Image 1 (spheres, rainbow, N blue to C red):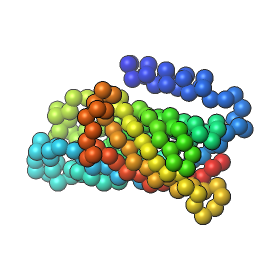
Image 2: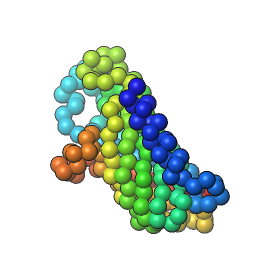
Image 3: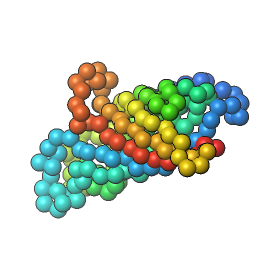
Length: 185
């Protein structure tokens, strides 16, 4: 229930901040890949067949919508579909929302959640079922023109933490990378 409350507040905040006219600003849709790498010794908790299915690193598919009411400010919502075996999940996806500043070079902050269906053999190892607690992201990237006037290449790096006050304990292993194509509508 708490997560639903947070999602509603976030949605209402974005609705109030967005201009009334959809004809102002730039709308874009994106598709891409996000490279992830699991930290720590998660594999030590797994054995046998589960360990074989465990993915320490890999690519998640990413779909996003970005709205920029002006050249330097924007919002982005995205969803990532993580592969079977991410950690030891049977299936997982991750919705995220960002506030972005910049144009060709951009930076932003965001919040996300993971929705996970765990393998039945390891479900008891996890402290949540279905929805995770929110996590926080800092993202920097390049949004470059690519081939056609409305097509953009989005290269980004994200830093993820479970609690905002953990941002002081920087760990370069927690940086993930993304690449995608974005088309302005």
